[in-house]
Each structure stands twice: as C-alpha cells, then as structure tokens.
Image (cartoon, rainbow, N blue to C red; front, side):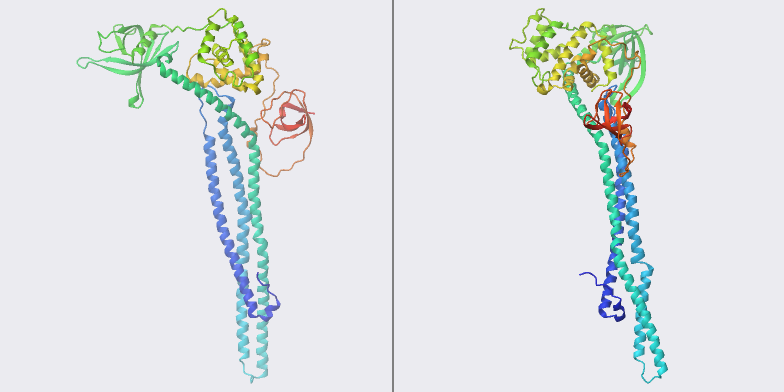
Length: 639
C-alpha cells in the first residue's frame, strides 16, 4: 500500500497516526532526494564516458582521413580511385555521426541533468522546505509546552490570571495549527510534483537518444548508395588481384627457373654490380670495391656508384668514365674469374679492371659494352582464313560451353594445333569441327596463345588508336572481338561475361613488351580496354573516326554528374525538415547510363513525370516508364 493522504482535519487532532503519516511522507521525500542525487551522479558519468567515446571515434576518423593508399603503377583504375577515397568517406561519415552525438550530449545536459538537479534543490532540499519543517517542529514544542504549563496552573489562581493563560495557550494553538496545515500542504505538493518533475526530464532524455539514433539511420540511408558502389569496386579489385597474383607467381616461377633470361635490359643502358680494382702504390697492392654500375650505350659512359648493403645501404660518390674498348681478361694475367679490362678515353694510359659476379653476368657486360642487342625470334601471324576457321568452330560447336576460354585444353594438343596453324601452309584445309582431336578447350587455348559501361572519351580514344593499326592487324582484331561479343551474348549458358573475357584476353591481346611486375600491375587497364573493344565492337570497327580526340573540336557532350559522395558531406543533418513538394515534368537533353540501382537510365528526349528536388544536391527524383529514381539535374530541362 502507498502513502496515506494527509487530511487537513487531522492537523487539529494531531493524533499519533497522523504523526506517523507525516514521518512516512518525509522518509519518502528523503529517499527521492537520494535517488535523484545518485541519478545525477550516474548521468554525469554517462556523459563523461560518452564524451570519451566521441573523442576516440573522432581520433579514429582523423586517422582514417589522413591516410592515403599508394598504388603500384603510373595510374589507377576507377575502382582503385573509389577505394582510395573510401577512407576519407568513412572519416566524414564518422565525423558527422559524432557531431550528432555531441549535440545529443548537450541536449541531455539541458533536458535531463539540469531539471532534475533544480527539482532536488528547489523542492526536496530547499531552505523554504526546511524552514517549514523547522517552524512546524518549533510551534509544536511551544504549543505543547504552554499547554502543559496551563494545565499545571493552580485552580486557586485569580480569574483574570486564568483567562490570560487560556488566551496565551489559544494563540499558541492557532499558530501550531497554521504551521501544521502549511507543512502538510507543502509535503503533499512535493509528493504530487515529483510525478512529473522527475519523469518529464527522463522522457526528454529518451527523445534525445531516439533522435540521435534516427539521425544515424538517416546517415546510414545516405551512405547506402556509396556502400553498394564501393562493394562493386572492391569486388572488381579483388577479381583483378586474383588474376594479377597468378600472373606474378607464374613470372616469379619462370625467373627462378632461368633468371638470366629475365634480367632487366634496356636499349639505352645496362645496370648491375661490378667489383672495381683500385690499385695502390707498392707495397699495398690493390683492393676490390663493389659498385653499382650503369652503362649508357650511346655515349659509352659507365657510371659507378659505391654501395654496400651490409653497411646499412650507405651511398658513396659517383664516378663516370667514357669507355673506348672492353677486353676480356684471362686468368693467366689475373688470378680472378669473370674480369674485364676497360680502356678509358679520358685517361689513355689507364686500364680499368672490373669483375663481374658470375659467368652469365660476365657475358652480359661483354655484350652490353660491345653495343650488340639480343635478337629475338618471333612467330609469323596466322592468316585471316585460319582465324576464321577457328572462330567458326566456336559458333557451331562450343559457343555455350561453360568457362569458354577460361578452362584450358591439353598442352600437347594445343602445341600440335599451333604448329598446324602457324607453320603448315595447308592450315586452311584442317577440318576442326570433324576431328575429335580438336575439342573446344584445345581450340580456345590455341586461340588465346596465337593472339597474345564505358565513358565516351575512352571509346573515342580507343576508336582512333584501333584505326591506326595496320589493316591486316585491324581485320584480325575485328574478327576476334566480334567473336568475343558473340561469346558474351551467350553468357547465361557459358558463364563468360564481358568482364570475364576481359580478364582472359587482356594479357593476350595486349601483351607487354617485357614481362615485369610493373607490366603485370597494368593488367587491370588491359582488361578494361578489351572490355571496351567487345562492348563497342560495332562502333570501333565500323567507320573510321573523323579525327584524333586531341585535335577534334569539342563535341556536345553530357556535363559532369554531381558527385553524391561530396554532396552527402554537406547535407544538413536535421531529422525533421518538412517542405512543400512541387511536382514537375522534365525532358532529357543528354543521354545517361545509371551507375547505381537508385538512378535512372535514359536517352535524349525522355520525359519524366512527378519530378521533385532530391535531398542530394544536384539531383532530382522522377518517374520514367513506371520506375522512380534519381536524375542528374544538369542532364534535363524543366518543362
């Protein structure tokens, strides 16, 4: 059972039960005061802990925003650019979230902490309440003391004295009863006031917390478009990584097996370590110093730089000499292998003796300083009719085979077919479709070994470059990419999409001049070019371009679309922002290809209905053919 009500009539009776009721009310108010005091202390701890969390989050966001990835290669793909900017995007998202958290903390202080503390001080522990209680106790003491004194007075006293004593006690009784009424009224007022004075701040507290979470939800919705696009970028990059890693491991394996064949060479210079003999006057003899040497072939200048990895990689001075001749030094004249005698133009009498690191290295330097270049043999290309024979077999027998071009054939059969197509003049007479030896995997592997949504500017640039190829090469490339377009058209059966074909044929159709890790890192760009050749085959291999992209007049092209990632950072963070919505109609003046599920694809002249301003600056929302989505504002005109 709860507290008993304090009846005003009981103030006149002042029974023991009434006094017990007052004590119960006073104890309840003391308990409420201790509760609010403890709650205020815990609230302070909560605010301080949240501030520490916010500081840690902001420091984390700052760390994300300050870091930038360094990529291998001269340029980055669109996917890599998006990944590079992702840390700044994450940092911005966290900062926006923490700004809202700071606002929540300020609101909690104003709506919860201050009202609770004010109620506790003004009502439960105020001087006024204490004065009421003290006055009530004082009047109680005075009244009952005077009453006892009156009752102990002798009845033999004179009547005037008795009347005067009675009047004094009556005044004391009236003062006691007034103070009792006022004190009881104050107790019941505080009991009733605490019901809303305590709960209302708590309601405001939860409303503030829910508003913060709602704003986080709104930020997450804004972040959703970017998240989906970034997931695609990450998946594309991971796929390219898998392909690049296999190529790198294969190159590493080949270099392990025959390192000299893959030694880095250049038509301009040759580089490597040489031990140079430094002669000293007798009786000190001579010493051999390791130097990193670069020989510039055209000027016949040898640059030598002292460097020893064991000394912490400290660089020494660079010495340059002009070579007149280079002669192999035999072991008969010097008890050291792999030595060369170099005659220097600047010092005719001086002969510089150097030592290579191995026999292969010795031959390398002899060849380099002699100015001879390696002669590489190359296969002759197959005729167009041979290529057509191979591709026709795909169309009729293997266009729907799963993993076409990705699953390789038996090596012995592939080499046999290659010899027929490259060496045999009667290769056109081979019936690939009739023979059981030539399965689809063998033919596709031979075809790869034999040949080793896109922005308009890229298509135009590739269009011009393709038409600069020799006619024979261009015809073969057209034949191959047309065939690959047919393969991609059947991707539901063979699972070879344009992207998969780009991964398979990128390294084949655009083989680098030399096999290096840098060249492998550029595979991602080769794949993109092959994808464009397949997707835009008809345009690229149709009519010749009117002019080079660099010389052509600037065509009428679609303007740059507003970046949603940038606009999201500057959006107001208010949760409730009601506006008057005006429906409009718009007409497309440029074509657009959607980059996200939330956007609309359209051609010039498309009519949009129920067009409204989007929350994303630079974007509209409208309906086209029953579908509602985002429209770049600068791609349309309002009707």
